[in-house]
Amino acid sequence: MLELKDVCFTIRKDGEDANLVDHVSIRIPKGHFMAIVGPSGCGKTTLLKTIAGLNPESAGALIWDGRDLSKEGDFSPSEIGYVPQFSIAYDPLTVDESVEAATRLRVRSKSNAELDGRIDRVLEETGLTPIADRPVKVLSGGQKRRLGLAMELVSDPKLLLCDEVTSGLDPRSEREIVRLLHDLSRKDGRIVLSVTHSLAHLELYDSILVLHEGRVAYHGPPEQLTHYFSVKDTEEVYPRLATQTSERWKSSWEKHSVAYNGMLEANRAKLVKSGALILPTSSPEQAAEGEKVEEEGTKIPGFLSQFGTLLSRRWRIFFRDRGQVLLQLAILICFPLLVTLFSDKAKDPIKRFSDTRQTDIKADIEEQASVQADQIRVGSAISGIIMFQVVLLSLMGSNNSAREIAGERLIYEKEKFGGVRPFAYLSSKIAFLSCLVIAQSLWMAFFVNWFGPFRGDFVQHAMFLLLVNGAMTSVCLAISALMRTSEQASLLSIYLVGFQLPLSGAVLALPENIESFTRPFISAYWGWSGSVEGLQTQVHDAVKSVIDTSLSASQACTYTLCAHIGVGLLASWAGARRHQWD
Image (cartoon, rainbow, N blue to C red):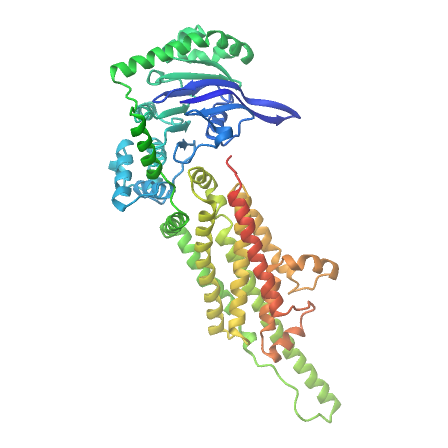
């Protein structure tokens, strides 16, 4: 039994409180199929989200099987299923893989046989078995709606909430989905609530809840809808609502609610008597045993299980996205090649002063000028090549993670609602991105050293390339986790990379008052400075002769870049935990 007692959801609008859900009171028994209808903006989706707990109720109480959810804890992930308006599956995966991933993330199975049995049952219930091997990206609108239902049914929820799952479908597909929801409500006493703008196929529902400006205007049998509103056809209900204020409709409903609730109970009794509605019955001992079995069967998997599922799915999606694979390969090959194009000057030997003092002053001056010019040429080339590598790896880091979380925000929020642990999700992202960072950084270091020898400590240089890539990847991952959309995250990450070179001081030294403020935040400076400090003495002196920016000790560079990585991961964790359901 689901009961709403004077439930409100209030927001601040123009400096005043506005009730988007205004004192809604209804009772919904087990095995009930209810439609929530009303004009656009009447609060249908808002009410559904309030029931789901996505919108915390501002007043009133939500009672589920005698439990006050606001006081005794919210729904457990296995008790509730929520099918949103948007797709909750990844296009590169197949139907079977999508349902399997949802099952592994939401249900702890004792064996592979149990897992496969649950998947096969859900596919059969939703009519997806014939297209189980079909990629999600080629599914029709109706098939995607069925897939969304299947991914929620894996945990056998007792309350299934559906938000506009029939919108945009042709009449036949719409009726098939409504019929499917009707059949699902007849299984194990499941309650199914469906938000819909359509007034077609109302005869398949047990009751219709009509909202007007957040208030209840009607809740009763579908066959009484036209009679209550004094219209000839259901399509006339919405225009009829506009003839009176929501307050008057609410007052009218409060006068007639008892009679219509009686009709609903009478219809329910007929369904039970005829066998059309079969509710689970058992003795107290059997019920207790059944609850224990159910609790064990729908227990959420542990961290390692969810982490493994999420990481495996991420790699599968990566390798099936040919565009992404080709882009990564192109970056991996082309960026080091770009660096080597400018490496010829860096290979030249640096002239030294002769051991014997020139007696000719003119010759001595010419020698000093020649040595200095040589130092400037080679030092400038080496400093530029190191900074070029650092900036390119910063760009790689941005490309790695700028869209990693923001690009799948809606799916992640839905999976988090279904029981996915934010720590497992973030850990899978870190593991995936770490592989990219290691491959990109070490390949850059080896390739450039092979074709344009790095004149210093190769291990130290490779380490700083790895750290600067890791720092930018983690910072951009944080941006991705904190932003609502992938466009916002990508734009901010691009700006961040764009400021790396001018603010690093590697090309032109900044004023001291600006440099002291910006330097701690510029990963490129610390990667460049740490690598320069590892150069051979003569090469290091040549670089020092052409730059005005002071260099930091290698140890300080290491600590600072590690701090960038740590701050980025902490901010990513904060963003991953934060509720950002639109």
